[in-house]
Amino acid sequence: MSPDISFLERLLDAPGPSGFEARAARVWRREAEVFAESWADVVGNSYAAVRPDARPLILLAGHIDEIGLQVTHADKSGLLYFGGIGGWDPQVLVGQRVRVLGAKGDVPGVIGRKAIHLIEPKERAKAAKVKKLWIDVGAGSRDELKELGVRVGDPAVLDAGMVRLAGDKVASRAIDNRVGAFVVLEALRMVVEGEGRAGVVAVATAQEEIGYSGGGARASAFGLSPDVALVVDVTHATDVPEVDKSEVGEHSLGGGPVLTRGSATHPVVFEMLAELAEDRDIPFSIQAAPLRTSTDADAIHLARGGVPTGLVSVPNRYMHSPSEMVAVSDLFHTAKLLAAFVGRLDEGVDFSRG
Image (tube, rainbow, N blue to C red; front, side, top):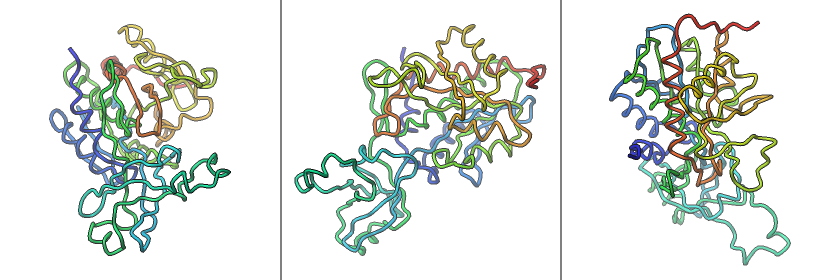
């Protein structure tokens, strides 16, 4: 029997660019309130807790923000110029449909560029740049934009909802990393239904895609002061052409979670995760992160006096595009691994190094 992914679809379809996560966060908290204590903070993080006063306390973090766009200028002709929220390849933006999240509701639009017929032959081979693109919502003036509730600073997302593909694959613009927020909440649900005495707080963190100083993850780890943390993010699936496996490893859709080893991840946490995966017949692969992980783990492991942190990633094809793709089985395998870690953890675990 296939798992119910209706919550996943609602979560992926809700718009929530970095700094503007509120709508996606509300979807997450409504689901969390069914079985856990839930709240939000001033940064935009959302929390769901089971036994929050117990020790050891485990933080499960998955960021809920997605990359998006933000209106930087409204031209007198009614066209909107924009900048990227997070890292975009401008080539994937050309011709896309968008939703501008205006004050009076979502406003549909399209991303425009000079037609190929009007571009000089010598310029056609050059890559598109964001500053040469614009959003056209059909308005003919600034007054019309005002009537629509659109103004400078409004965020926008690509208008690409979740689609179900062959097998158990799904695609969405917001896989990175709405699936991480989904996984940590599903793991918490499994904790409620299982055994264990440790306290657990799942956090849908904000502003990871623009969090050069740690984003919401830093604030959540500081406030909770957990004894250990597990971060869930996505990593590059390498089961597609022209990806150098010698650089990023061998990780495939359906191959299970990816466990990271590196400076931001604690060796004891890694070994516990690997042992549990083998004991529970959960498929997994290993990824090296010799410099940084470029995830919330980088901020969390240095919070306060340091937090023993593990990073568990979901293989993702076509990252930072409108059609990111994952296998649903990988999501639930990752959630089961996190829940197993919570069930195994007790006060006797020694995380000291040396």
